[in-house]
Length: 236
Image (cartoon, rainbow, N blue to C red; front, side, top):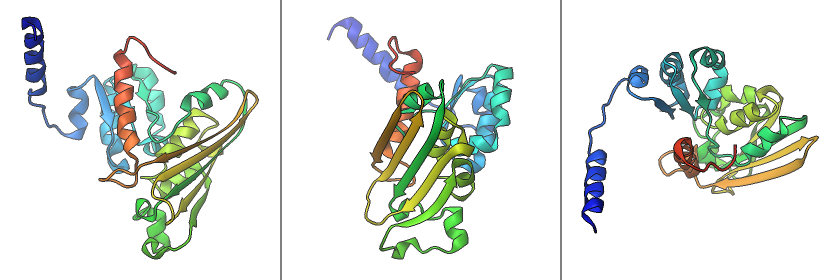
């Protein structure tokens, strides 16, 4: 290793060893140009609100919560903020967004998750559904993506994002199934448009720490951040 390479390595280690400030959620925008929101939906506004008011770039995963705070989108235009929604657990955002530049007739999504990935959802608790004893697939919800947010705030971010990319959450049809026969979070999407008709299916490995989401979600955030400064950017 050359002296220059050793010096670069030393500086890199020093950078990685630099202490990181731990601050309140509402103070994040005071310390960062890019704020990544990956918190529970209940505290979404504490992270997103100050970021938008400060004109920071906001990368958010709680897309369902964003639907409940849509005024932030208009406010972002006024403050110069860019709100970025990573692909998260979904594939094909570019295709849906491209189709939306023309005319989309319908968008339908069917989500199947292992029962443990849906445990504790408000709708499940409200109806007293015992997912632990489930032996056959059970459809828990059928309706539009916007209505699903209330019953499954930790599970429908992917559907909310799909809605924002295409026809809108109100017109995006969604089914949610608890299926004891599957081990992955499965999303199947069907889109009919004047430019194309396409179907997509993704089977995400659940996170060990949070089975409600998939491992690929965190990786999509990393890819989004890298794309911000990359000399070559693939896709929209």
